[in-house]
Length: 125
Image (tube, rainbow, N blue to C red; front, top):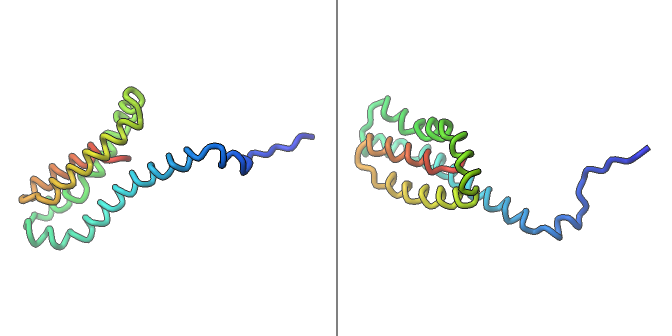
């Protein structure tokens, strides 16, 4: 009878510290998305006051990011396979930051909707 031990030994973690660095980078990428969603949720009353969007526009401001990122999930995965996942993640994170500035200075509901859609293009899944 053979024993099946599928748990890695503690020495594996010591020999490959890059795994933890990679995990930290991925967590930071997802943190961008989480912070964006939290900020949008907290800012919605102020957006309603400042930009005076209609009900439909307010729904689009909240939902267009998810629609775009879901629609591009497969094609961005394919692009990541072609050009490299690291490069795509870095380009996406930089673009996400730049488009976030555009979101911060949006003056109309339409501009905010377009900027949120661009966040979906740049955003990490």
